[in-house]
Image (cartoon, rainbow, N blue to C red; front, side, top):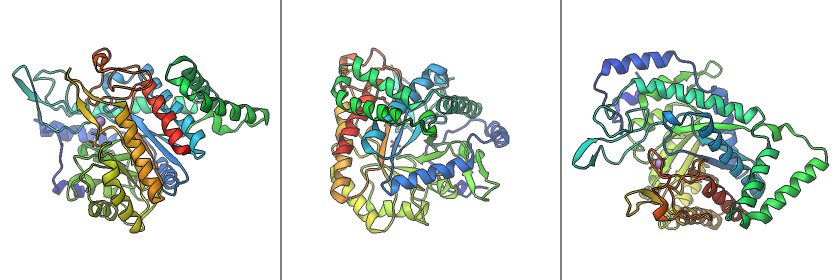
Length: 438
Ligand code: PEP
Ligand code: MN
């Protein structure tokens, strides 16, 4: 029995039929791994470089993936957006950008309320496609363990296509650069970045003239990550690696523990402490330095750079106030976690129309605050963690091609939190690039 079983596990579905769950778990245990443990080690090494200040992490994707979203167009658009952001950031930061999708496993959502009421009808909340259905009907909202198998298969087909795109030629740097040039030319917000795009173009022409044709131009290292929320699923996909004898959660390369499940004595921290994957942990505004130090003790007792990533999500109005002490005390302890900003989850509000949204300016301001704090302390602002999509949705307000509150209803498609659309994501990448350069 895994050690987390005896501990309280927050945010787990209450399945009406425990035997059905047990049958599904047994089946999942027989399924092949989705990732190879060696790849998890490689990502840990890449993140080690981020921790030392020699690389930058770009982590992004949907708040919640959906089974319906497992199609070529959706996946291609997300990967394309991340690659475009990655190219801009690589040039500006002049260090490798480690690209990690919130993809191929991000099907489970923690919720602040167990139920949802509409027009006087109260039903269990939607907890992600891995648990129950999005439709507001009694039948859809019953947790169904069969969905865990669909999550596995959805993750497998997504990952397969992501691997094909990133190693099969689609992600060629010259192609990605051409997409960025197109964004700069054709969108009103893009024009601001003409100078940076021209510099990148000159660098590419220079390399071409030198006859440089590195393999790195043709293929991209891309990793998959998700919140390790449903412990039955994650445990069924935790396997002993034959090379090293260690346990790995082979449902994704990196997994993280969310703000709602990071209880020190809870099951999620215990689970994460047993696997060798790189682990992320979301740190909200109430996190104390003592807690941060205890997470290091629990999850990274060897102080191995790349093992632990602190994903800070404080809110634009709190980051400058709360982050400095955390970074100071952690640094003073000799630990070297990766520090990443999630500028989305501390900045959510409900618009008058009832849509959950975020202001692009708040997102940007939290990133700025994050960079300021690290600059002040002489530590490394290791990366960004964002919710985005490659489509032209209208879920967050603001941005260069401005979305107004009154536009939100036009293309509001998220199954959970509001995402940056394609143009807002690229906008953010160019702005972070400018910040990085000083
Ligand atoms: C999320 O990443 O979608 C999420 C729910 O974040 P947090 O755990 O930080 O609230
Ligand atoms: Mn979210």
